[in-house]
Length: 171
Image (cartoon, rainbow, N blue to C red; front, side):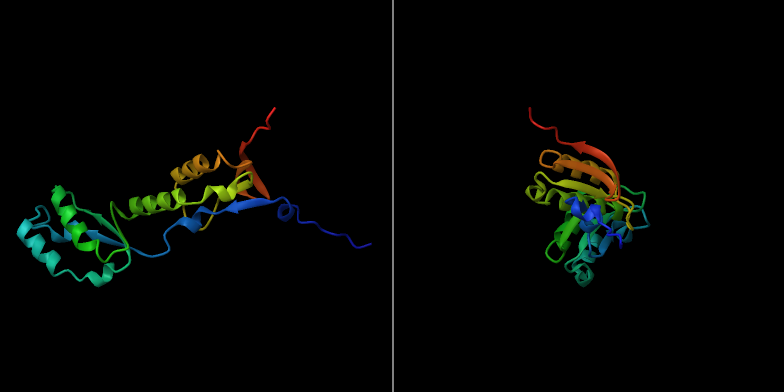
């Protein structure tokens, strides 16, 4: 008699949520203030304004832009404001920070926009061990968002999970 195999994971109603899906798909472009420093130390306002006027904005078109300074220099706050003012009309979004920091900010925004009502009374597995690194704060954020509505939250893969939260049954 042939044996029938049942996919218990598929029948369990578990929803797998992969945070990699919320990382930015578009490449991030870095606007580094170090490229505008005189002698690698000082930002001259007149020269910087002129450089911004002549800046080729096409490389920033519809891109996430990270405005940062990778040099060990004191950059006045107004310089970041000027750069943002020049980039904002063409960029998808302008952020302050290095590439890693900005990627984390975008991921946090994407998680904050997840319609959690879709997960009401659902069993959810937050996928672990993906191809791209997901910062721990993303798992903290998604757990905070889902806990009030989810039936249960687990971490790992549907076939092997670590229980994180299970809603208690009302008395």
